[in-house]
Amino acid sequence: MVFSSYLFIFFFLPLALLGYYAAPKKLRHLTLTIFSYIFYGWANPWFCLLMLFNTSVDYTNGRLMQAYPARKKLFVTLSIVCDLAILGFFKYFNFGLDNYNATMAALGIPEAQYLGFFRVVLPLGISFYTFQSMSYVIDVYRGDAKVVTNFIDYACYVSMFPQLVAGPIIRFQDVADQLRERTLTWEKFARGTAFFMLGMAKKVLLANPCGKIADTTFNTGDLSCFDAWYGAVAYAFQIYFDFSGYSDMAIGLGLMLGFVFAKNFDSPYRSKSITEFWRRWHLSLSTWLRDYLYIPLGGNRKGSVRTYINLALVMLLGGLWHGASWNFLIWGGIHGGYLAFERAQGKESIYHKLPALLQVLITFFIVLIAWVFFRADTLPDAWQYLKCMFGGATPGQGEAVRGLIYNPYYVVNFILAGVTIWALPQTWDFTRRLTWPKIAWCIVLFFVSLIALTTQSYNPFIYFIF
Image (cartoon, rainbow, N blue to C red):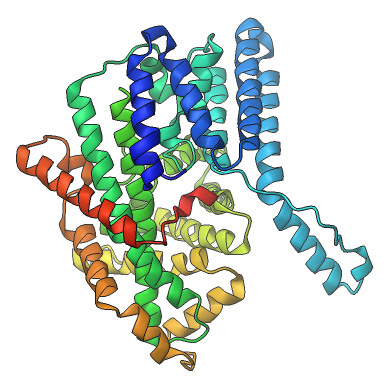
């Protein structure tokens, strides 16, 4: 079930809100948990059992840390090992098997290959709820959060449907107090509704059309240089509006339920360096990696060389978190390498003395090159696309492709996406103080989005697969 669907908007969400607000205060977490499991299990109910098992393991180890503080290290280790083992199996088994078979073939011993039918299906959002659950046991171990004694409260935190399958990653210490007590106000609900409407517009009116451009270009073998750049920029627009739109909707739904989630995007394409980019892009992941991986590895406390290694390693693992593919590792390596290089420059880019506009353009160029690896299906596909971008390929299907990607509807939406990114205020700032003109604008965009949905067969959420 996706947020930008009639099923969610007209059936699930009204029922969930009605059930939540009608329930007695003591039963609201139970009500929200039930609706969240229905939401998560809509496509495959068996995935609910996996999430319940993960939840039970971390909840139990949290209670054991409270009961036996002298053995806290043992229990937090058990939790982390179990969480990572589950994540590793479901996310990386197929990748490991494919590489094993490729290695055996390269060594000339095909009889050692595994050619069975067994393949693992990746549960939706497993990376997101696993990281959330891990943050709880780590926070309890460090003393940054109190142990949750009520299982339903903890299950509600892990499974909360607004951010369950595609983030943002809500750390336990950020919502611990809200789980105990929060206020439900009309002001919150109104801002949440505005967040949801604007996020919906980002997704349907901007991400989806740009996604069609990107899919067409990336699925074409040979392109002209200009067409390839056009497709790459379209993908950069798509992934931003797709994920930031989902985050806006998640934050909005949280506000409707009384929860305040942190900002997840801060105009990342306005960054003047890669370091700044990661202070603005997918903030919940970047701060999670910083606090639970980079700092425990030593951060910048063990000398310059170790700092550079830690930055590169964290981004490589961040790339692997996104998916089991060499492309994601290269994407993480590009960002990690630039972060290490800029750290050596004193957290500034080598081009920091250039005019601000040029700094933004160069940073966007670097991000764009990395996105090619992120988007391409295979490593050879990524190299081929880069070859097209830099004029090294002979266009083979140019005329047919241009007739699709330069359709006026797509071109207009592409331009609107660029204007929105670099000229308009963020959703977070726009909704801070709602006025009647702003409310009217949100309603208009929402209804246009609903109308557009009736004509769109293309409506994926990129981060569902992570």
